[in-house]
Amino acid sequence: MTTPRSAVLRRADQTGPAVLMILGSCVSLQFGAALAVQMFDGVGPLGATTLRLAIAAVILLVVIRPDVRRWTRRQWVAVVAFGAAIGAMNGAFYSAIDRLPLGVAVSIEFTGPLILAAVLSRSRTDLAWVSLAVAGMALLGIESITGAESLDPVGVAFALLAGSFWAGYILTSARAGRLVPGHDGLAVALVVSAVVMMPLGGAGASAAFEDLHLLALAAVVALLASVIPYSLEFAAVRRLPKHVFGVLLSLEPIVAAIAGWLLLDQSLGPVRLAAIMLVILASIGTTVTASRMRRRQTDSPAELSRRPAASRHGG
Image (cartoon, rainbow, N blue to C red; front, side, top):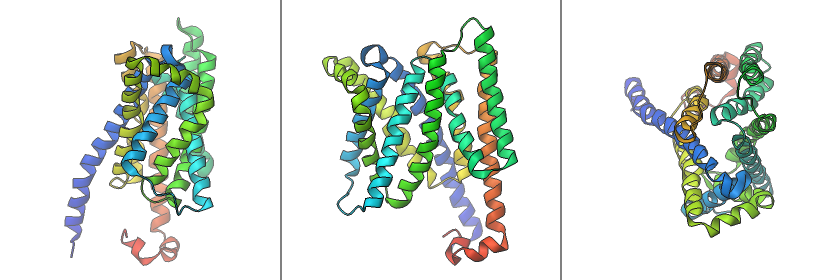
């Protein structure tokens, strides 16, 4: 029988590698986005999105080989909605980073899941965290108006749109994950996302087949921005508490800023850096608040009485 001490040690052994997986996912995703920017002159942001999603879909289909023969209509609807959210989110985000520095675009995009968290919880604390993120956005606006380099308003609009689609991605991925076991839903959702983007980015994507350098770059972007981060996150989420997972993902804006600085020569002044840090603090605060609320609900006698016996022991 497993002792409490050995169980704690086993969880600690799993947590270390899982933390590295999430950090690796953040680095891979944002450096992949920075590389994708280098494709925009050749295929455009929507063409780059289509190529990335299509190549990633092919890779996952070959590796996972999803069995869809017994899927119900409910499962198909969930996965199609998930795929549509992936396509829309990525298309809007790539359109944003075509016009904005990478770190700024990711910070603006983060407002989507933050507002979703506040709406779902209806907690004053979460509203306060969202207010902190809005303060960061206000700093970006002030810096844009008064600074030498203003932010492209169309790019800001695309980043906000990407944030709203990110909120949709969170809701649809949760539903698809509940209804479809394993990674099958993700593989098929990526196919759907590529199909959704094809009318908008298909013409641009076809140009890559006339340039082997562009095609190779698209394959690298698909690996860095889709296959590797999704695989790492799926492996890590089973080993990490949700609040730790969320806190680690909250570091993405600063990772994006570093990737933009190293690969795209996008410098960050003190005001933009302060704005990014406010968004990170808001994201971490929302995650920690949600974790505390879940613990209080879980520990209450009423909640425990409603849960199956196995769940009380982590089963």
